Amino acid sequence: MLIKDIMTKKVITVTPETGIEEIARLFLKYHISGVPVVDKAGDLVGLVSEGDLVRRVADADTPRRSWWLELFAGNVSGAADYVKAHGRQAQDVMTREVITVPDDMAIGRAAAVLEKHRIKRIPILHDGKLVGIVSRSNLLQGLSLAPASPEPSTDDRLLRARILEALSDVPGIQVSLVNVLVRDGVASIYGVVESDFEANAIRLAAEEVAGEGQVDIQLGRLPAWGYGYGL
Image (cartoon, rainbow, N blue to C red; front, side, top):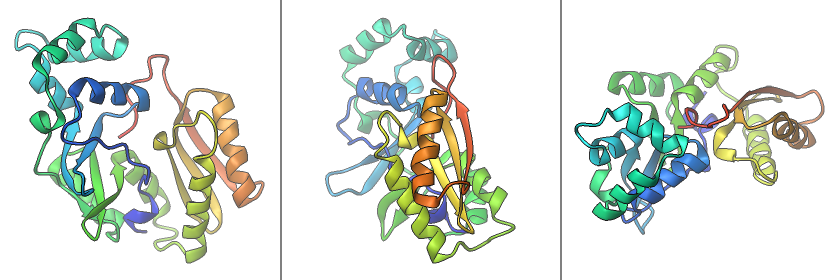
């Protein structure tokens, strides 16, 4: 199984000029903890993680974790004022030496790259352009299926693409929190949603493409405050 068979294709990105306050809002909105930075040509130039924001913004005398949890819990006024006053941008805080892998790399090798560099997520490139992103959870999901079917068929890959397209049309669903793996015509859907209604909507949309009984739902529920999942 290859990285392109498990990667999240709808990647939330920012530009080098995106402000830190806006990045924090994206983290909140999409329940993610990192975003690739791309320039006007679409080239990957960096990556901003929650750690990058904390190191640059948090006061040295303030415990990092408490400041960050307060931000995501809703106490954003002090942090927002600090960010606004200092006018930070993605290019000021981003990690510039980004570890990437090509979309045709085997998932086992990609997992080894994450382990070697102790990173949580890795951007995926095709011909030098950003085409997706993979997190540790994506890799675990793929590895759980890989032993029985190391190389998905063309039909499985087509079915995955069609299901992902169908899910993008479901109102209120954050596709960035949902991933689809297909093996032998059966679609396994992983990720997190906010309610049982969203999970049922995803199941129905997937079954319209794959067929009734051909969808295995493995969706968790976001906690009330929503943080902790995603990339």
